[in-house]
Image (cartoon, rainbow, N blue to C red):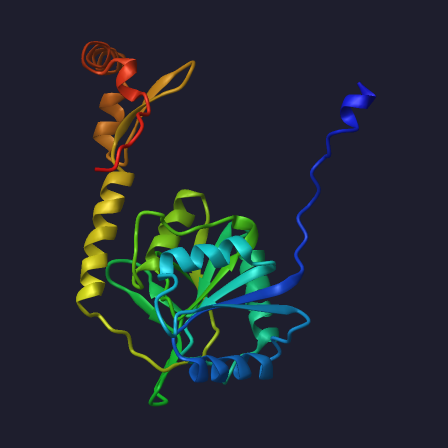
Length: 277
């Protein structure tokens, strides 16, 4: 037995090489350099922080979904900051951000995402950011639990092991996507007091609305009601209260099993080789 144990290794608590990993998709080197200088000036030094970027200057190497998943997989920081290249730190520092994190950690250890702007519910949004013209949008009530976060500045807890959808593509709505995934995994998102200048007011162009349609369809399917089967039990999951109650009754589960027995036999689920024509 001791010989067998010698080839295995018990897991240990995860340690991180850095406090923060700052990740950016770059299309303008001068703008990115300006952003970097403000981070360094506000205490995000290279001893405690690593800086990762994807060079999209000459061509689109990675879109936001694929690129940010690369960041989330490769980051060695305890906290991962995903931000636009057109932000400038002018008010709050690394010390302030750590204080905000500790505040949230005390209030809700199940947090995974922090930002300076986002959607609270169908009626309310929270904006705590300075616009390019110097106009300061200051949210009175902070921290606020959020449904979604704005993409200009997103902080992700590395240990939450979050990722973005593999079946979406583009440069919009990924703040919404990662919040939905975090919620499904049991984590929460918050808007915090970390004010910075964002030099863009957003660009709701045709690609934005096309991706909004895609994300609606993606989650319509992902969150669909469905019958589930394990090796020892069967049940129904749904966000619809009536459907959840009705489809978990014995008679409905029995009738659905008979449907699968007649119309959906096991060989139909065999993975077949795909041929390119």
